[in-house]
Image (tube, rainbow over the protein chains, first blue to last red):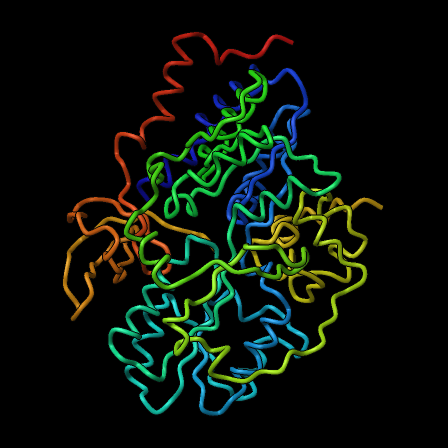
Length: 366
Length: 83
């Protein structure tokens, strides 16, 4: 496929690796922010090809992973209602809450459906006027325009039976939380390419300046990542700390202005609890007051349930780049994609799940 | 989850109040919302996430990494690092 295959070219990748080796004089720790980037890095073994001393640690950018247990339990409670058609992206269905996952609920007869797009959920609501259609609106800024469009369309078309269970998360507050964390090791970020396609790069400028960290906005293919790693190493070696776009075929500095406008119309910033990390101030979106009629949390009274996380799981430290999946005693043993103990194993894009999928449990430290 | 895939815009059509289009992803066609890329024209590549076009792919920028490698080649920067 055009714009994918050429960025997987092995010869070009070797040349970029040579450029990185030439530039790197000292050891550096880089964090890739997105789960999709982690997945690519582990799939292609990029971290193992880098010169010794250049270490990649894996960031918190998997929205499925960081969706709080409380929110998953809330989704479960709403989806269990007989009058509800509960719609979700496929990746959320296998995530275990305190009472099991949505897929198990579906097998017990609940009407849980996988949709490709939030706009499909709006269509379902129009076609099923007697049922309440609820869409589980999770995601980073990348997914916010489509989710905002679903809310906006439902309002415009007057669909009283449509609502969204919103659990949106934002990237810049998460990066800031990592930098403020005692024991932080991250010296540069490979920034979230698709988040910035929507939001632009302005929000990262103060982070780069204040914490003196280069932020290289990166794509997701091997050449994109290697190009971004080269630029990060170049900045670090040269003593720079700037925001640089290494994914300019998709990202403009101002982002997509129409998307940003719609997001601002539908959502407002709120505090959000991240699974494995805890509450981060101003790190999420919720529906604005004008959209309260489309808020599933208002529409369906759901009691908060006591939740309990595994005491062994170290996903919180993995999400902050302090530890690697193989540092966990449960990794690949009690904790696998079929029986995940925590955030970073529940979705294919989580660091632990990526390590597991590409066979890295075979080298678990003993 | 933030997976977005480049696809070629085949046709544009209005679906009641929404600007939509057919996008080809290496042989698989999908209907995609074009509301936030209103200037997109058939034949052009778009970056699509959950059925929603986020951006038009900039063809000139797409070549940049390959041009960078060319430059490095000419400068002799890509020979094996001194050991």
